[in-house]
Image (cartoon, rainbow, N blue to C red; front, side):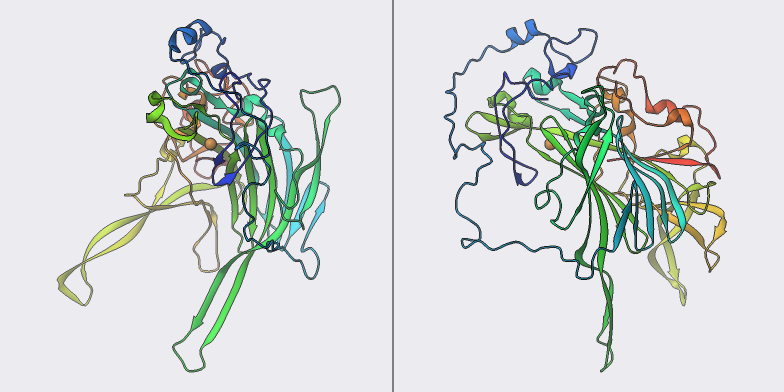
Length: 459
Ligand SMILES: [Cu+2]
């Protein structure tokens, strides 16, 4: 995914000092990054145009290879702390509290199966908490990165990473660097494009328990002389994979909390695809080395959650928090401002399409209307959104149709076998007429009340 005609870089990306592998153009399978790509696709640049576009010439010296080169992974500068001290470690004083049996794991009331799909990436199946299934499937569906810039490489690069079989990039996690030393490394065997035999990856996943260092709950009462206290650190089980896709490394964690919350977290690291520094690139990034611009680009992720809360028949509702102009209940002469909530059942696929708006706060819940909790209230799972990121490329234009899933933060569809993923491995190449166009999933606007529903979640 790096064009070696530009340069070999390495720098701080996403808060970490990273990278420095020899440049390799073998990843240049992406039409938008390969200048000789087909003229049928919008936004792509051809060789002859590149030649005419680039009229500024700058000659730079080849860097002298040294241990102090900015792009090296070798330690540079002083130790911090100056007298080396080891960092904190995960300790399991009474042994592991989780167990793994083949592709199934158990942890303090949790039980789930896990695998890697060659098409899309890591997946969970049959996720249960305290004996009750809460999800039939939770899968990574797609990862995209759309670039901006003046030079052809950055301007026209729009990656839809499953086309590079990003899912197969998690092969060898390193304890102490990628996962705590205490982690269990989990091998994986999967068919891939590299040979006639299945690929065997020694450490495609790691699993570990640690505590987040903050309380899951606590209260210390100071109100009485003898007071009281109750608290519990948030200990969690993490199933981690790290997909290396060209220059990027995507860390995908499934995190199981003891209160029944299941968290999915995606982080991007690696080293950036950069650009030669020129003043025309100022709109798109800052200078990060003598000749290098770190370019603006947009990472987007798509997840599929086939939830089964108290059985198969689920509905999606929002609890909308609204302003309420009230009067004081004990003094009707006085106005007062407060909030209230109303329940909003989403009846059809198109009603479910959700664009985040800070002015309309709401909870997103999925439940079975026939099953209530002890108090007769809905026994629901709430979908929490974090890390949202708005795509600004107009709908239906340029390469946007390849990532139509990014139009909404939530979309709920009726489950269908033929709609098993919201993207395809061809997404990077078939923008004009995508093999899988997620917007078609909800075009028929089916009823989603008390059905087997799938929540599509984008960040
Ligand atoms: Cu990035």
